[in-house]
Amino acid sequence: MEGPLQHSGSGHRGAASARGFLVWLFIGDSAVCVTALALAYMARVAGYHLGLLSPLKHSLATYLYTLPVVLVVWVITFDSMGLYRGRRSMSGFGQFAAVFKAVSLLLLVLMALSYLHKYDYSRALMVLFWVTALVLASAFRTGMSALRRRQLRRGRGVTRAVIVGCNQLGGTVLEQMQHVAEFGYRPVGFVRREHRGRANFRGLPVLGHAGELPRLIPAHAIDEVFVAEPEMGPAELLDIVSECDGLPVAFRVVSGPMGALTAAMDLNGVGDLPVLNLRRKPFGAWQRALKRTVDVALGTAALVLSLPLWLTVAALIKLTTKGRVLFRQERIGQNGRPFVMYKFRSMAASCGTGSSQPVAAQARLDPVRGPALDRDKQAVPHGEASDDEGVGVTPIGRFLRKYSLDELPQLLNVLKGEMSLVGPRPELPRLVARYEPWQRKRLEAKPGMTGLWQILGRKDLPLTENIHYDFYYIRNQSLLFDLAILLRTIPVVLSGRGAY
Image (tube, rainbow, N blue to C red; front, side):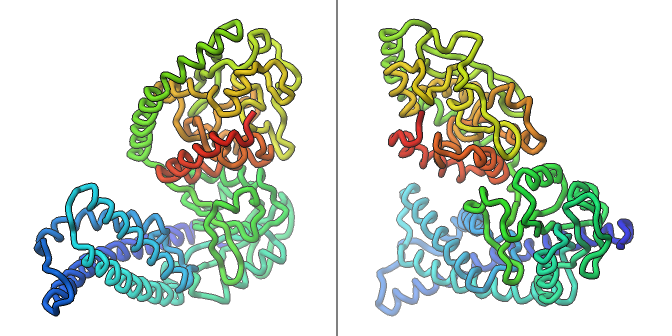
């Protein structure tokens, strides 16, 4: 068995090599961008001298002045297509497709910026830039991929990996790693699912059981963990991933026991094996600040524009029922902090103000593990009884719930900083108290007015999938992801599909 001290720096050297490769990619891409712009300009000028195109309105200096913006957009679009993630298993066609989409997106963004800037840049030059950038970037990436494969075959910058699963699938993963050196994986050993078992498998040591991964990863300088254990359920795997969140390690699931998340993950492979990457995208301080800025700006605009609707709803509630217009209920927010959430009252005053709740309103348990995180109205909704059977719901309340108008007052929570426009559902304190360790990860983000739970089923979402969507959102949140969820929320809400 390898000693932890003997190999403690190997994984870090591999990670350093991978970072160095990405630095060279960035430098090369910058050179490609400058060269493509220069060649496109020369081709545009040549087209004019050949009588094929009209004269250029702007000098080369004008286009060079915009170069910093072009470089920034280049990096953003290439990163959005995964071209800075160092995917060693991406095929040649897959890489060309990613470059094609990145350069095309770059062109669209530049044209949009040109329109917003009210500056009439040459359209022919932009098309020429697209062509030259596509050719040069593809050629550069192909050369860098060949160089990377050669380094990996020579054992430079290898990734130390451990395989969870002493079974046939785990053995197949080992064979792929050993037989194709250009993947650059150095299998350190196996990890069994059980607490006790064999000490060796397929000629490699069995380092311990899955629950010991938080200790085994730093002890053996592991860079990646391949989960090849079909019997491992989602909750068990999420527990392990959550416990290893602070470690510099990537999880890859072979054959996909995480069925609830497969539709939204990147598909990679090791040889002929499909692999799902359980990566965690960093959400830095500047992204959080920008998200908060967007929340305040859009929240304020939505509040102002919806004020007439607020007044109308409040008047209808007062005219048709007795009691307060707003319901208030304690919920648990980011990092476990409680806050009071608001909504328009949609039930008769006698049904939601008492200390007791109808049986139908009691929170149900997730049959997989722990409390089910179903839509709020299904688990004691904002202080009101569930209307699964229409108990106590007023006619106006039924309309408000169908189109989610009862949730408009949560804009106040957004402006107060207690909620976000997009995030996991706000949960009840008594359900949070019963969370398993991996479920508490959903408290890392602010709860949202909408989220994946809103656009992927609402009431129709199976109980066992609810928390998996929240977990996936937290691990992959980004500003573009939030924007996509917001845009998809609009038709879902207007249709009233799956509402209560």
